[in-house]
Image (cartoon, rainbow, N blue to C red; front, side):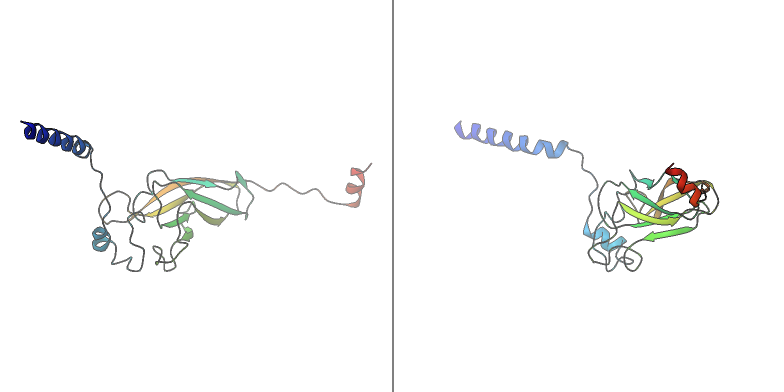
Length: 182
């Protein structure tokens, strides 16, 4: 009788310990074999990671460093967000859809197994247009746009670049300077 109760108690403890593992839904996990079969042909010298292609698309943000620019001013756009870290390729397009900046690994993709790879947040640079107006640029992360398959694509986030006409500078004459002290 005693051994029967002991076995029953041990069985109940084992089932109680296993219940959370059975009841918890499993999420897709990254496996080195997926990198080998889907990525290594193009990313042969990159650190094996799935976060280089996945998990940057969901929460991307793009912000300009200023509210208004004068024609020809330098523009810095910060592309940020993502749900996990990992090397990326980031691009900046002007309102004509022409690429004006790109940040990526030394050979154009991945991290090339080197330190200081391009990760989010990343700063992209451009020059404000010559004509005053409102322009919509696009900051983009390049990679797998969903959590499956091997297709690559871009996830773009718009950023508004407002170019204002420069204000005329008052003539800085001796009479103007003298008036400041009268």
